[in-house]
Image (spheres, rainbow, N blue to C red):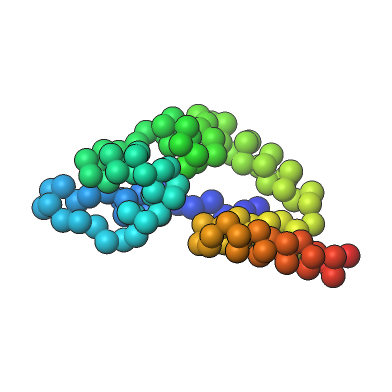
Length: 127
């Protein structure tokens, strides 16, 4: 089964949670100040949140917010190749790697390293 791609609407909604709502001078409290700084660093997050400036795809790629910028006509082929490559690995190993990556955003490095080590040791029980 192919990985499910997020819809453009959900991506837009996620991105908008990072923006200051300039039309009525409201501060958005959707977690953008906490998430964006972890994703792109304090300086760029400060600039974007305080000015409400949007980021284009090339800048998002350069900051590491997105993995790759592709023309729309190349997107499906690229995605299928990536899915095929990932599909060659153990589903359990892939799931554990995804879990470790997602948890890395939520915990200090020392805790993340311990978590990763536990997951690594757990993979031996699956062989």
